[in-house]
Amino acid sequence: MELAQQMPKKKAEITANLGENDYDPSEFVEATVLAEELGFTTAWFGDHIFPWYHSGKRSSFVWSVMPVALEKTSRISVGPFVTVPTGARYHPAIIAQAAATLDNMYPGRILLGVGSGEALNERPFWNGKWPNWEERMNRVTEGVELIRKLWNSKKPFRFDGKYFSSDFYFLYTKPRKKIPVFISAIGRKAAYLAGMNSDGLITIAPRNNVQKLKDEILPAYKEGRRKSMRNGLGKICIELAFTFQDAREIVKSSWRTLGIMNKDSWSLPDPIAVEKAGRNITADDVKSKTHLCKNWNEVVNVVEQYVEIGVNEVSIYTGCNEKFLRDISKNLLSVF
Image (tube, rainbow, N blue to C red):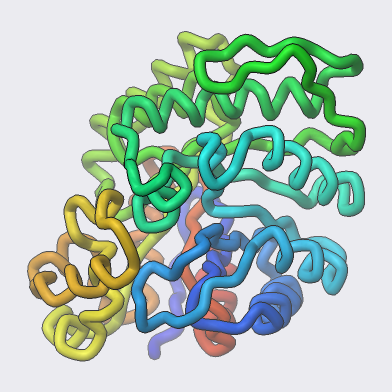
């Protein structure tokens, strides 16, 4: 594969998204060690109880894997991409405690991505029900408020939220450094709420292509930042999907993994249903959800287009694939 030679006009942090599927827990630790050796500054982990597709067979618990990965490394930052503090699978206070404990032991190396979740992972904890997006997102923003208050409050407090209320909250083991919180958003409403309530935005590309991100998502996010009087833009992170394969070949050989491309994949009830949905994904769907590139120079061009409109972090799903991590280090970390 051709080595990327271009030098971009602007810089972006290239991060590894290791996920939580397909591999055993120890392999995620080994991948984090390798990522640090290769020069990555951040390794994101998925936070699912079930894999995205049934044949994936594995789904590690991120809050058990991250501390081992942190212990085996010395510099790289880690965090969930993303966790769901909506009060079903996780109460916000549990996420606050888990992240604070890690930062207490590994200060300054903990990140927190949060979002409204997917039915396949959250629905069982709602007794089979699935709240609408508005409720889920309101729970996320209220949950983030509670998480921050738990981290920062020096004395016990009462919290009277719509979803999370108690006459006594207090976190006894505090983080040592400020833990940045990023909110995942696909649409304008969520982007606005991310601007209002978080330290940065996480979104998916090319589901949000350069033009849509520029014209719709970033303006909504910036308006949220202005409304809440937050300084600057914070982190603007895209999860970038690209491939060197032909779209038709991907559909033919990898259909089991493609159900996530379903328009309503967030509401599919379980990994079996998501996998079945992959049968209906077409080559055109793949083209609209993945950047099809011929070589690394084309990948650099794609990244640079996003960076030009304000993206300052590009996260690439690598899994624990050693060769892919090395290729990204050689062709993207060396350029950006």
